[in-house]
Image (cartoon, rainbow, N blue to C red; front, side, top):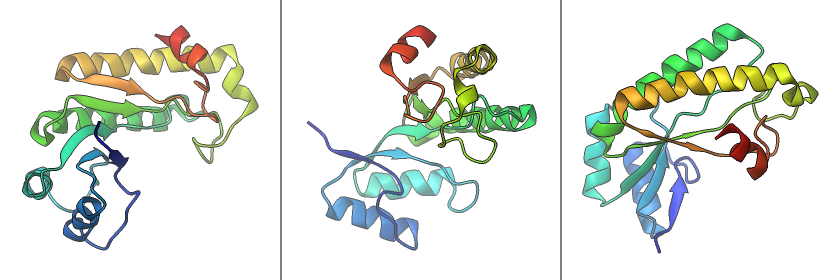
Length: 160
């Protein structure tokens, strides 16, 4: 058995300090969120390799049913960027959450999450995400979240 963490669970000022703290806790597997700015992919990978940390997955979470269509498009562009970084980072897995209709937070429940329109938008977003996954030969790992449109194993199964 291997213990892993979501990057950010342990927080320090620099990447080096962060990864040192992760290893000090006996953790060698991370679900990693590639920052928009900061160290390059090569630098991150070098620091991970130096500590024998495996990147088990990259985070590709965005609000797949955001009521603002432009925000959904921006999320898909971000997903494409993450997918392009998978091979250089040594993983083929991207984690996703499905989002919420709440315009302020994808982590907050909203009554419209259970509407046919939200489901339609989710299916459309997932089809686009699957096209990215196929293009980059990566696996999408779906995380049901209690406040998201996919808030149960049953809904996750329905989506699959």
